[in-house]
Image 1 (cartoon, rainbow, N blue to C red):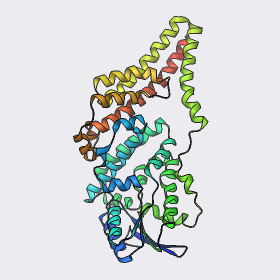
Image 2: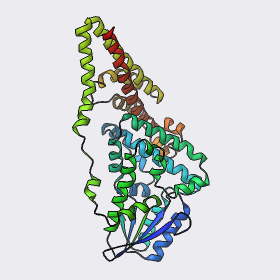
Image 3: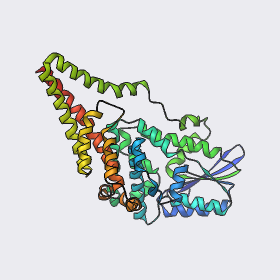
Image 4: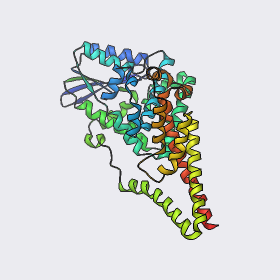
Length: 389
């Protein structure tokens, strides 16, 4: 045990000795411990709790300048990118409060490995897979709650106490952000923490060399030890679960229900009732999608495009009103080099999220999709009342 929070554990496997170092990603002491331990231990291999994209992010702090926002929207990765930005913002704010650099422990491990001519092993599961698996476990409402919770965590980072800092040193950063949210959505802990514990245990155990140092967040220590001697199907942990028939049925059932209600309106209530129902449908979808666009401070033309697209896209699950509005907003207010350069700082405040063109476009996509979804569910009972009337 090192101090009250950082610790090292020695594990063995097939004649290999592994020195596992538990760190806090926002602690200067953890970063210093990592560098000192690697220099003294002289390992053949250094494993770090990073995947290739996160490794590139640490080595290239200006990576956001390369973001293609149109590609993000077209590939339907808006929620994932926004979640990644929120997590980065939380970690950055905590690190600034402690006077350190986010991920300094990992950066020190990389530097020390290079100095000792040790092989570097990226031991964590790719973050794209982790977030995608988590995303597919949640519906639209769950994603919205997650965003609200993450934003609240960023705002609360200004009031963090020394006791909170000590707690952070024992947790994974994702776990710290989602601590309260886990109770209502426990599958997130399985995907974000437990599955990664298994993946890390497998990667570290199978790393090359006889003397290995593995640098991981302190929150992963117990899980890695628990799964150390387990048989782990790592391929299943890397796979994106296919969308089942249930997902497809739900995706198409709502548009089918809407069309069926329209048909019933014309058949049972006549032309006037059918036209009235269509009018309610357009009004609810257009109004709430437009409000979503206005809430994200979108361009007036974007607000209009959201209002026009929402009634149409709501009966076509292959296209979302938010994606249409996001593309329009991008074309009207294409992010500048300055927006991309300022992104790392702007994401640390709510004002910055709305000011920066990159994050504002992401908010447009999310808020317009949310408004359109609420409009759909609000319109259906109103349309049903016309039939009863």
